[in-house]
Amino acid sequence: MGLSFHYCFVVFLELVLLIEFVLLGGSKAAELVVHNNSTNNVSDFISTFKGSDVASRSGCNLFQGKWVLDASYPLYESSSCPFIDPEFDCQKYGRPDKKYLKFSWKPNSCNLPRFNGADFLKRWRGKKIMFVGDSLSLNMWESLACMLHASVPHAKSKFVRRDSLSSVTFQDYGVTIVLYRTPYLVDIVRERIGRVLKLDSIQQGNAWRGMDMLIFNSWHWWTHKGKSQSWDYIQDGSKVVKDMDRLTAFYKGMSTWARWVDQNVDPTKTKVFFQGISPTHYQAKEWRSSSKNCNKELQPLTGSTYPGGMPPATDVLNKVLSGMRKPVYLLDITTLSQLRKDAHPSTYSGEHPGVDCSHWCLPGLPDTWNQLLYAALIM
Image 1 (tube, one colour):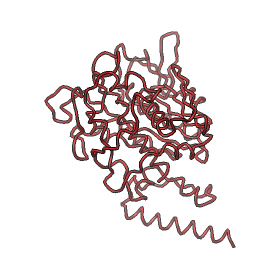
Image 2: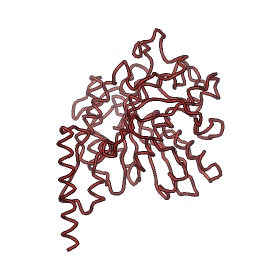
Image 3: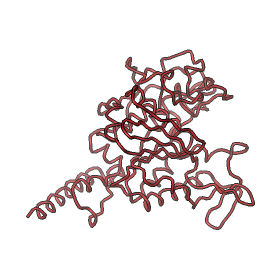
Image 4: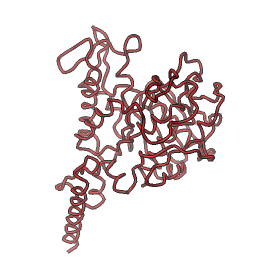
């Protein structure tokens, strides 16, 4: 009798969701990932939604909104956080203004829950969380470590820093947040001809297994050329080339990553996020300014749209994510970050030369990314 009631309830849910899907015009935002033959209970059924779908169903799009002044910010002081790299510590290295620290993100359709580090640690007690990607993953990883440290300043922590694998463990809670540095997600292998970027290989994925949460990121390094390019050749299947269209290469590499997730991640044990494309502000004409770049920018853009439009990599990422079988929540931080032309280190990044309009000050914008991550986990 109980089984019959459960079956009827699930069928009822499916009918309701199907009607809602039709009313929404079949949009990708309402796309369902439903496997009827493997759905055993209502919670499993609900858990198969795409992340963007969950946001829309809750009546709140977390990623559409505006920046507002908030006197309660920042969430921590850089001088009190032991995990910040010099390249992100803008206050320590002479940035004279502080208004950029006082903005919070306000979604149009709901309130963003305030980050509660103690609650985060209790929810993830005994778990391992891994950020996988480039220096933007480093930016977000250090931000989360600082936010948690500020919430439980007297908790014991262990900090291990290495080139490719670093971690912060909050020992009183048994929570470890790990950073795995790999800018392309796919492998680079040193061979006789030189360094080869292998678009269809992801052997390093073995290090990502066994995590309770994975937050991936990639894009910035795909555009690098000359001395900043970290490979000599690209291998696509059996074909080895000196170069190719970078968006095409990104699509092929991301498709390999997507297959790895589909084949290796058990969504009942591991939550998967993708940290959306983080923008740069090297071309002031994108926001219709006569200045050169982000240097000396002191406030965000007003409104909810960016004059320069979306980076083309977002289309590639959306295409890859839409074809995946396993649920991946997209932290769609691109537009809200585009509005923060004021939040880069610019010339206040320690001993790093030049103007940095790629990374972000800490405290600063990545704290909002983590606040959105927290919201996605509890809403």
